[in-house]
Length: 298
Image (cartoon, rainbow, N blue to C red; front, side, top):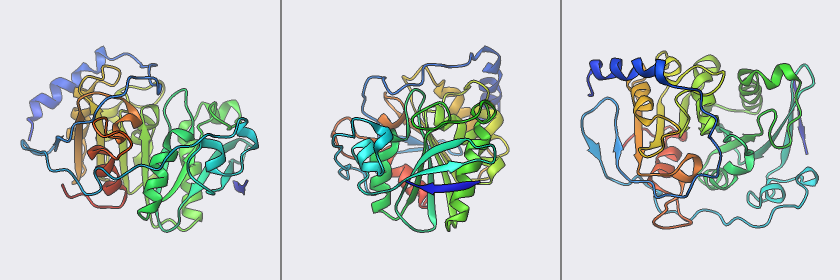
């Protein structure tokens, strides 16, 4: 491959997991959900108590988003393509069968976040958060999944999200990664959770990943063998993702560090910004950034 630069009870968990039979595959995972305000309250899956203490960086101004290029295909930087991200270069990850996964490389260093986008969207949805994260020491790789954005893939690779995740992980390792966190929103969250164990990432951040998404394993199946730190966030009002079952997935995980964060409403990367203070990082966004950097306190 090549890269081109251009304690809740056990019984409750069992009851919730049994709802697998009633869960249908979800297709409503777009960025068009109404904006909402993430609540600061977080609930640890391994404890009965909650905390309302806002993590560091909560309220940090998010980078401004400008006007992207009229034709994304002509862009050579993240800023040109997405309106935010400055001169971060666009890349192409090429698989052995010739599939080309469009990507962007922002920041430097060994702490790497691999960003996976929502359905019916592209890597641009992560550009604002990834730009802020790069300012706080996170080297980010954003990708367009096959069938989205600027990626052009064979049918085999398009049907194999695990291969696309592995392509991103291989790039990170070849470019000096010492720590890799899979970070996904909505569809991307489900994919991050599903393949974290397989690619042996160092941590997982799943923002509003549906409990069951198309051909990937459901959240409990994916989370149960995980020993990596696991953060899942979802809005209690988000019926598209089955938040109660996502919390059960966190509880089922074998990880020592695991947390389920609740928001009042919103979906996907909407949870990363503070609806009560537009243009600033929410408590969930700040906690996600901590997680990426290997800080699991709070």
